[in-house]
Length: 395
Image (cartoon, rainbow, N blue to C red; front, side, top):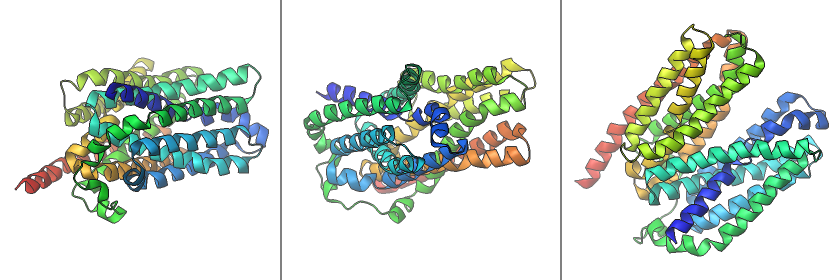
């Protein structure tokens, strides 16, 4: 039964990735239909991100009250409703409205599921589960492309994904007894279920919390900036054609997905801290390759290596949270970590866009190196703090 639940969680992670790339793949058609500027996609993305941040911060409260199974099922259902809302929308304002439940659903399930896996499964499963998210994110554009190529329109692309989410909701509802069997482990059977959820001030006050929040902010800022601006850097700075640059940029995400698949096996030999350091080292090598003036080959190599480096960091930080901060605080910590991640995702790519527009796109590798340096410093600063705290608890 425990393995059956793991299969269901794998399906849930694929489901998490399915909608994430839909807006980008459908927007070239959508913005023309709605007669709005192409830049308006950013507004929808920001609304989704804001909802995700809010629900991530509430994940501790919701999970303590409802349990991981119910939070996951309800969140996926909310996402399905939002996607169906997208599919019947005929105005930009309607898209903005449906973006609210879209974001709220995504944040709750993401934080709750990640904490559950961190508590109950080995590190390799965390890595493979995030690889499954990549599979879902890759399938989404293919489903949208199928709808567009068949003349069904972008609305049907969203509707297909909504139907898949409804099917997953049904599976999750039928699986609730499996989650309940694990409820004793989840609450600790020692009164943890009666503890009040931690406030944001209490969470930030936990030793090492601010450092890991900045670490996660930096990682997601780096990943999003690297992926979003790779093509522009290659075209404007390296002189590649747009078609070639797009192919090279996709290798960054292929590197992440492949790296997480391989990283699951590496976790059998290396702990979470070593996996994070390995990833940071690879990102450094990949970014330095982008600085080398040797043409397309070094740029290609740099993006692949940087993608491989990004692969283990997110799942390893999440998986190490119960170890560093305690199982009783892990849900609250993961919630604020993911909120920090979404802030980094929203904030830093536009910051680099401003620098590229007013100074030069050539700052791309240097910008990534600065974020990487701050990530390394904050993660290394956090480790002795949580080690000292755990030692003090043992005395």
